[in-house]
Every structure is written in structure tokens, then in C-alpha cells.
Image (cartoon, rainbow, N blue to C red):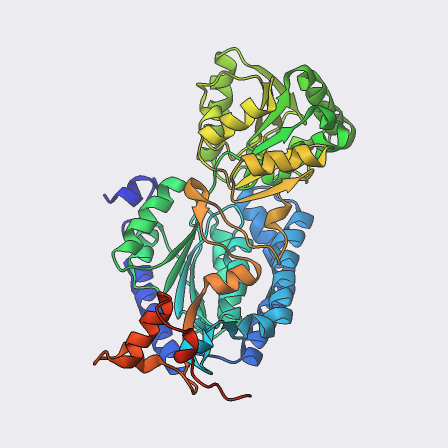
Length: 496
């Protein structure tokens, strides 16, 4: 078994039909791109409008698919993220596409290059592959598709096998909306997931864990395929003493409740001044008691994606309990049939626990005391660089100090996770949390080839670089070393 399949238990090794379909669609899209390598702005905007319309037309089906895959999923959150978030992203890209597509003019020294024109032109890369995680099956497939289509590309999407209802709906929606030589969805098992990154893509986007991300990058490297890796990590929330209040704690805890912690930019742990730990816990308890007393059995709670992942979360919690950590359970008893769990605060856990070393990806929030802010920041910096970092402080200078002293893919001050929601703001990680960006102009450029173009004008010395090297080349060198007047070599440049 391959290293990738070893990390993905339950692989269906007989995925030959899906793999054959992948290769057929890949060849079809490569041929179509060769025939039409640079669609104009109006064509791209039409594709973005079709994408937005597709989502809005399938609202109820998307809601039902999310509920089927997760056991329980809030309909309004589905609307906000899996529909409206993507549609808004498409509208933003369509509005700004004309500016994004413009040539980015660059300086060329008139003393050497006369009236030459230089600039960066953003051309489509070609055929892009997208490997989608299970936690946001529409947002993390159709969201990046926005910038890929805006950049003029053709796209093949591989959904997660852990969200079969969403995957099949995505395949059907896309097939009804786009020709298969433009956008298509390949549905299959884990053998298809292994095959997918081995193809000769023009770019590959993978969203998931760092462990699998490494293997995807290695497979892509065999064909020198550029990759965008959106990974995870232990995203901290740092609260300073003046901000351990109801509003800040609600933001931290509420973010943890989003998808029941199954979000890559969720708060993985909270750092709180030691003398304010009990106040933090009290605010968290009051928030759930007053607003979400039966959270874990309510419509607001997302089910854990699989029984296997649920067992992992319970094992993390049991290890903390066995180690003597204080655990505060909030939000009711939960519902095992729909894999819904309450929120568990783990107060001052020992450093060696798995919840302190693994990305939790579930409703467990370690609350870690600190005595000195700079020591807390040093502890963050000693680990892998997180995808997101959140600081809560009433003092702007302190918040800016935290931002300057740390490194993360994105960050927020006095709020959490909003850096992943803005269509104008490039989103991505650094180091172990990923590489590359999508969203906004950064996404458009990520999925474009920034082609440097020079158009020769008049009155230049370009021929000085060609053999034989004689008086003109000597004059250029002498001028550079101050051995002769630069005016001796400056060409006469006609006025425009």
C-alpha cells in the first residue's frame, strides 16, 4: 500500500472506473485549454455568474446534503458559508476582474531600453486540480473555483469520500451548469485520491492535514506541478488581562462552536492570564447557559463527521481526564446518534497531552494560563506556525506587539476567523500550515502565470548585449563604473 493510502484507512483499491474517468476528463480539459487559452473578461464573468446562480438554485439540496453527511448541520450556517459566502466571492471577483486582468506596468531604464514597454501580464495557467476536504465540501471546492475561473482556467475537482451526499450533489450541479471540458467533478474512493496528484496538472490545490499535504506535494513534484497547500495547525487565541470579558470570551468560544470545532481556522487553544482563568471559564459557562443551554442536542450543533473521528475526540478528552486535568463540560449531554458532542474546556492541561500537540479539530478547548505575555508568545513561536492567530486586547499597542512578535498565515484582532471570510483578503498558511493563497486578487494571481513581457521601442542600447562586444558595450560598462559621462551613451528618446 502506498504512503498516502496508509494515512487514509479504508481505501477502496478497486477504483479503476473513477481513475479512468479522471484521466479522460484531464485529457479533455487540456485539449480544450489548448484550443482556447485566454478567454476574455466577459466570458469569465459569465462563468462566475453561472457559478453563483448554481448555488442559489440548489439551496435546499445543499442544506440536505450537509445534514446527511454530518448527521446534523445548521441550515443557516450552510446558507452563510456554503452558499452566500461563495456567491459573494464570485460577485466580488466579477466586479474587480477587469482591474485584475490589466497589465501591471514595470519600469525599464530609458537610458538602456529607450521607449520599450515592460509589464506583467496574468495569463491562465491551464488545467487545475482541486482536492477538497470534508469539513466544508462546497466552500472549499467552489470557493477556490471562483479565482480559478476568474483567472481563465479549467478545473477538475475531487471531493472527499467522507461527504458522499455533498460529493454527488456537487458532481450533478457542476455537470448541469458547466461543460465537462471547463469544470468537472471526479467522485471516487481513496485510490482516486492517491492517483489525483500524480497527473500533470498546471496547478494543484490541496486542503487538508499537513501529513497528507506532504505526500500530495511529493507526488506533484514528480511532474514539477506547482501546489497551493491549505493545511491546518494549532491556532491560538491570546487574551490580555484587559480583555477577559464577556464579549471576547464569546468570540473565542463561539468560534470554537462553529462546525463543533471542525474548522481549520478554529481556535485550537486559548492563552489567558493566570489570574483571569476562572473569569474566562465563568464567562464561557454563562454564554452557553444563557444562549445555548442545550447546544449539543440543538440544531446549532454540527455532528462530528465520522464515528472514527468522534472516537478520536473522546480519546483525547479521556487522556486529559486521566492526566488529572480539570474539564468543564458545557452545552448539555450531546446526541450520539447524530455524533453531536458538548464543548469541553480543559483548564491548565499538562504539556504532554495529545490535545497540546495535535490539532484538535473538535469541541475541546484547552485554556492555558500564562504569567508573562512575551513568554506566551515565545511558546507559540516554538511550535509550528499556525494558519490563524487571534489576539484580544483593548490596548492597540499591545495587539500590534503580538502581531509583530509572531508569524501566522492570517490574524485577527478582537475577533476570530474573519480573515477566512473576506473575499478581498488573500487566505492561506505559512510553513506547516500551508503555502500559497486564494481569495481576492491574491487568488487570481495564484492561479495565473505572471508573464513578464517586454515590447521593444526605439532609441535603446539593447544590441550592446549581443556579440561582438565593441564600443557601445564598452560605453555602457564605463558609464556604470563611473569611467565616462553617462550622457555619452544615453540615447535620444523621442517625445511621446
